[in-house]
Length: 251
Length: 94
Image (cartoon, rainbow over all chains, first blue to last red; front, side, top):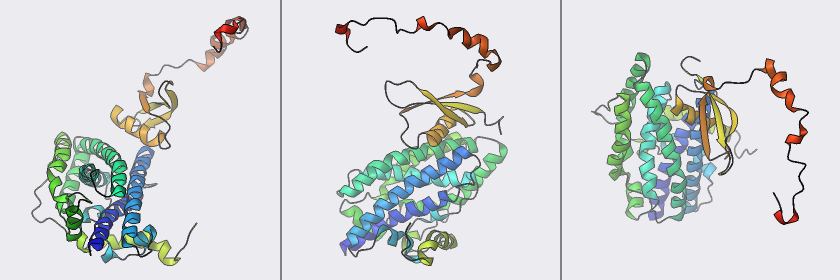
């Protein structure tokens, strides 16, 4: 039972990273400039690296011979446990950058705390991810400042993105029973304690951008229970197509 | 785009102790974003540990039309190369 909780807790985290990776990957070839095309896919590659490590560790704990690919490509929508935030559509550049800032501003302190994990693999993943998340905060943050404090058009779009995405922020700080169990034995950090750190990272950026985080009257959650928005199904259609159409395909 | 996103020349230092070397250019709205863009475009395979970006407009280049008068006069002055000295054995590798 304990192992099942640890497995589920790692899957939640791995799903966050693989779904956001897929979203960033959707920009490949479509970004406004070549420089950002590479920046977005560089960030996507950071995320897939982390997701792979987490899926592999989860599979190892599960001990049923499933591989990281089985976990990423052969589970259904309701079995995905990612945050709703990461499955939100890319929208415009402001949506993508604000979503990235919200996520990275949570994960950077999370991985900092995970450096103390009792699990050696988690410590290893954290050591790499903490630097990657620092860069995602910097890159997304610089853009958020320029979009919020830029032209009338960019400010309007940045405000619209804040309005659309702020309702998914609360879920970052929720702890599922599995995550609570993993935190209880010191394997993963307690998510609930990271709101101050998240505010500490986002507040100065939003202030410079002239953006305000609206109060979420009705925060949206459900990802950890497999209750997703319609968008996740569309992501999985594309992401899992190859393994579903040609099971076991390799190249 | 070039008004809002001018061109920046990118220089990377591969290792401590070596000089920064020109590697290419990026478009960016300002110096901070130019550094990020240079990082994302030119250091994806561990190419270096330091980046400089310089506005391309700040570079004054020699005129290719004046190349003859600028560069050719050095061609016959081989005595400027330090190849005519006997190095004493004791000095070793110089």
